Length: 400
Image (cartoon, rainbow, N blue to C red; front, side, top):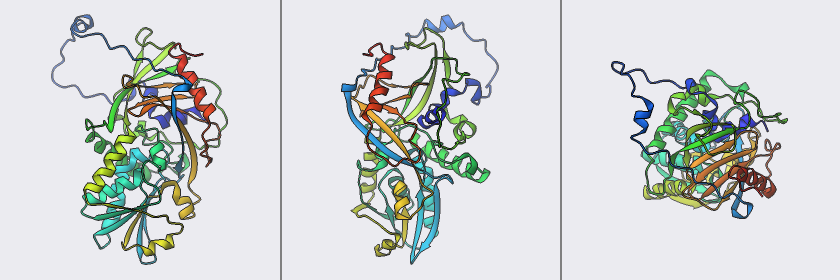
């Protein structure tokens, strides 16, 4: 697996850019000579020390594997007639399902509003299904969700939980100005919706600092890149959303506690998926939505539904349901360590196959394999996660 793709999937690509790559705020008012740094610093307490992560294999409390529904053409958001039903497709978001969910749902609901009737069905109860249902409700529609699996037994529940709107969302060869415009609209709509969820009970959405670590200068390769069948992905986030991110800052020796010579501090948005998904479900039910357990094996079964408009938000399941072979499974595995509320920072150690996200339900440790692309196998590989935890332990001097 090409490590730059892993980095982009974590949302830590912000850390790769120098601070000069981000749009600077225009000057306001007359220039005022800055106060000496020492004089300012004297009025503030020193930065709080980072709490160490207790990294050991015996603290792994869960291993999760899911398949991201990569689609080279990008998410399928379009309407088609199947029999007497209008089917509005909303699937194929790669590793960007949570991040693009609100904007994607807005586009899908607009297609549904062009049809008569006030009742709609949503097939699927993951990130895309739930947000589509909520946006439809806010548009004045009555919504029923039909799904084989409910939270937490859906693929998107096992996502890493970071803002990563361009993670495996489209292959480089399929990038067009039209797609980029639609993607930017989805991403910005979603981003602004997430800002309205900050500070709620359970902290469904948070901003976290993170540390991007490297053994060699950032302008040098971290090591030989392994072979991968995975396609190139366009760096849409840095090109089109730079104004949404705080700048990354290069740290000097002594400004961080990690035993590596090079480090940058960045800031990223994270989702506590356990609390966030419950919030979505509670809102859906409070708004009058209903949930029905049902499995669909063929789109012909849509004819049995009472609703004339059906949102297909089945994610990777659309591959079997619709026979859509354009969906490519991209395997992803995470391990959760026992929660440490005092740990409030992310880590990415370049060249060591290690990405760490602090969540309320545990310290998430993500690692990947070279055969993840086009791999539907969801069998957990404990050795892979234990190796990642061992790498993490090296950063705190606790490696065995």
